[in-house]
Image 1 (cartoon, each protein chain N blue to C red):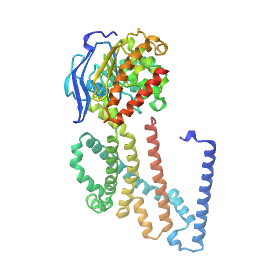
Image 2: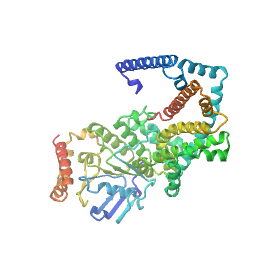
Image 3: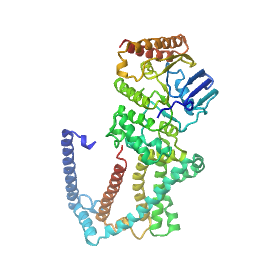
Image 4: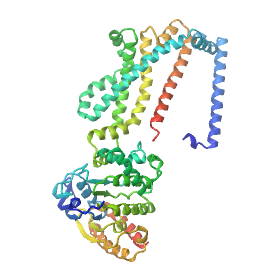
Length: 285
Length: 260
């Protein structure tokens, strides 16, 4: 399945969003994502990246500006949009395969077709043979693989992913990033990927958008010219990857720097300091 | 976690069991001895050997105990079924339509706070001396227990599950039946387990107050005729019955909720 028509693009124009009177979560966001493009948004916590995603998902009501997903305004439950969270959110009473089939069940896909699709996709995420296991019998990483399979078993051309690997350890994360790359390269869907992990963003994406902390503004939109197909493991030693990483990191540092200058928000500054530290460590590795 | 028990712990369990049995035997022997020597009047405490004799006769002899137990269990089953179904239905309605819950809240709160046994005279008047008034009493207890556990279970559904289901395209009805309701099953089941014991309590209570049949009536009759051994025998039987019912419910629960 090759999705390259305009129907799967995402457009965000002059979007502002506030929580209450005090917090400006998103400030004048403008993003255009072409169909079949993989775009990540990075930024310190509290920069409004999840707010943007939830607006696109239709989970939050748009306050100001214009937003379209596949040419239509956002709405929760649209069949052309799939959504994934950091938490696996598997239903503990359903087996792995029944969890994967959940979306198809809700969307009225015939039972035989959704079962075939679930078996196929569970194979792709490396869980062949675990179809009838309940979530309690699976590890964290395996559960998130099931969640990934649940997301990909739907043929929605647009994927919204909110830090899907945020809760995993480093090694499991790398494995799952590779699984995601594989799945994505098979069917080139439009992906908007939220993460606070810069390396992850660079390795996976066609473009990385850097946002500053509160109010969330777009600082930079960087094209990632790494050739595809990519392998997360091979990229670790790729000088080109490190060069791009350094460039994007420069922007992110600026986002954090601006942020730390803001003395009123010490607690969040502390959080971003932790982020700076962890990113620096990653850069050194 | 029974499979994971260490050999040491299993040995300890056995030691505990041996001590428990030993203590019980000594207790019964002391009881018997106290009774024979009339240190306490056997009218008050009975005599273990005679209690067992009563249990044996009324189980294998005239089968009085079993016949009365059948009446009680019949009424308990009905009370449990009606109370559970009613509680479940109202609970689900309350979760689906919170306005309905707000409407019924004062009435239900008052009824639930009322000591239910106080309704017995009214139920006798309405439903007569027969089994129906006992069923009504048991139902009135089970109903509120299952109602409350259904509402509590459905309220505590994981919000992320609801968000995810919505994003996957579930309709409100699907979310209700496939997510909210299923996720509430464990809590509902603990309501069932408690509700069953309370159905038995309501029925026995009703039988003690006024009845022609049932274990409660038998208990009341035996106490009235100063047959202390008989009273202890019935109590012993009731304890076993209660434990069996709870264990049965737990077994069903374990089977249905093996995903936990």
